[in-house]
Each structure stands twice: as C-alpha cells, then as structure tokens.
Image: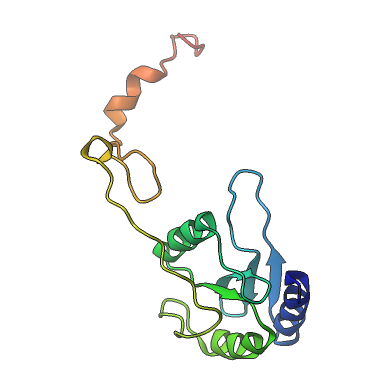
Length: 150
C-alpha cells in the first residue's frame, strides 16, 4: 500500500471527526511533517504519514524533536488501523497536556550528540545564543539629523 492511500483515508477521517488536516509544504524548511491537524478548541497536532513499515528520515525526526520541544504533539501514522485511535485520542486530548502514548507508529528516538566545546554557544535548533542587549544594536543603524541613513 502506498503512502497516499493512508494519507487520503487519514484526511477523510479527520474531516469526518470535525477537524482539518492541512498539507504542510515549506520552501525554507525540509523535513516538516506532512499534515497540520487542527480540531476545535485549539487542538494542533503534526502528523507524518508513511507507507506501511516505512520510517521517518533523520531530518524528519529532528523536526519532530524541535516541534515537540515547542510543546506540539508529533505522530507518525503508517497503517489504516492507526487512524481511528488517533482520532479518538485527538478528540479527548487537552492542549497543554501530554498527548496519549502509544498512538501511531513507533518512531525511533533521535540520537542526541554533545557538541564540541567550540560550539557550546548553539541552542537545540542550531542557532547562536547571543545576548540581546539594545545597547549592542545601537551602532548598527544610526540616522543623521535629516532622518537619512548615516
């Protein structure tokens, strides 16, 4: 069975349950989950859909980790029988609480490595941790008295 078959049935089931499952595409960020699932009462869940037995790629697992650190549930559905338990769990879930365990396909943990000490100024997203002090920024952009760039 192909991924699109699971995806089509998933989208129909979400719609039938009163939600929407928007297709996620991004020109700037690869590896995002396939669907952004929204249910009433601000329930927001990211779902990666796969053909049966297929696994999430390392970049997809990294995006999952990043989204989960922000507090969003991220699941993988790769078989038709996983759809109904997902719908039931999503409808009973309250945002801000942990999403029920054991829903969807098992996702291997992302291997977390420790960065060398010369990269200790990076956060979990690979961004540099620099102090944001307005005084530090004052010299970057100054206007002359006419309001033009200096």
